[in-house]
Length: 106
Image 1 (spheres, rainbow, N blue to C red):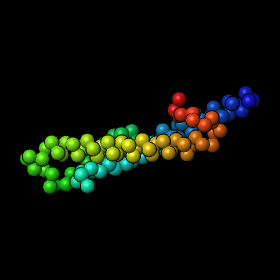
Image 2 (cartoon, rainbow, N blue to C red):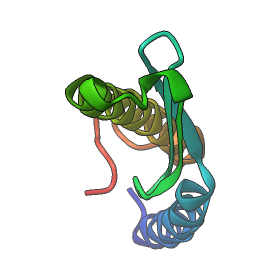
Image 3 (spheres, one colour):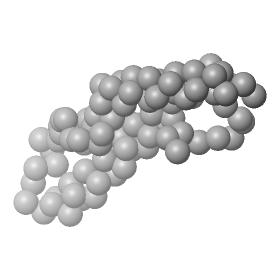
Image 4 (cartoon, rainbow, N blue to C red):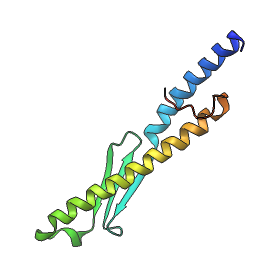
């Protein structure tokens, strides 16, 4: 492979990674638990952006159930964020001609 071509590809990859990092922050996903009784919204950095709890869960004896549902909704949202990041990474890096199976970021 030509050295200049490699340098050009490295520069393109660096630019793509910068763009990817900016786009990741903008990704949002909502996790749901308890058939929609608890909803959690996370951004691409897994920062909590929103939490909605159905009022029916706000009873004195429902604390443990509510805690479990919040954790389940967070896990659901986190999985969706990770999938969206993976898809965005593949979309942006697909045109760089990297070897199959190479994971980014390094």
